[in-house]
Image 1: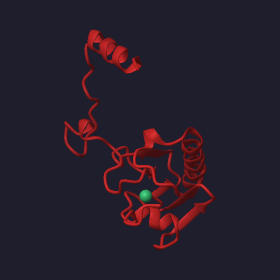
Image 2: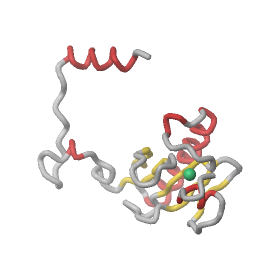
Image 3: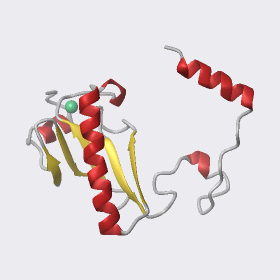
Image 4: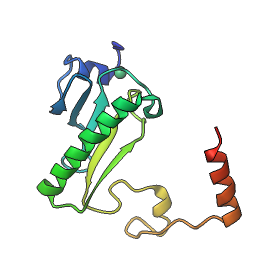
Length: 141
Ligand SMILES: [Zn+2]
């Protein structure tokens, strides 16, 4: 545990949170600044900064918990889809966001907003040769 880490302290029970689920390895709780009501965070109890460094079993536990929350959110809020994403922006302790999507822009990228905030624009396609090169680079290593 990292003593100055907000999420380590929540996991240890030192700070309050609106807990939704807990086991020996993970905790789910409501985000204090929700995009939509029900916006939840799922974190490992152990301090890991980056989601890509999570052990596979821990990443699976987080995803499985997010799936359960997503099914519950669909029933509760009547939404068609629930988003799950890691951003790592505010707290350097890996956390998955789980957000009931009432609107397509609830978790959207600036790339979709080129036609204005009320519109939805598909980003332009890249040339096939560039896509092939990107894929080749991503497959390496
Ligand atoms: Zn931490």
